[in-house]
Amino acid sequence: MKDLLLIGLGSCLGGMARHLVGLGVRHLGVASLWGTLAVNLLGCLLIGLLAGLFARHPNVSLAAQRFLTIGVCGGFTTFSTFSRDGLTLWQEGRLPAFVLYVAGSVVAGLVAVAAGYRLAGGHA
Image: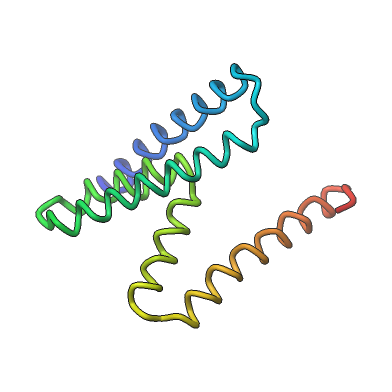
């Protein structure tokens, strides 16, 4: 239960940070898709840094790792988790699984968004 609460707190903080980036992008008059790109890339950089630090410092508690990765990074952008999982498959030499995961996530994600849009009465 403690881990669940820590993940929830981290997710809350990550979501608030994501919202602040969105506000900043709007303030600058930049299209919101560039804010999304920035968040996705920053989230990927952060989760990569954390993964590297956790590999070098295995004494970091699992609760702290979950708070930072699943919670903060996941609340900031789920793309960072997607990218980290893809990297893990690549590093493990699981090329067919890597290709299926990455291509499947992107293509199926776009299809799912279009399907949801159509189900809601839109025309995608």
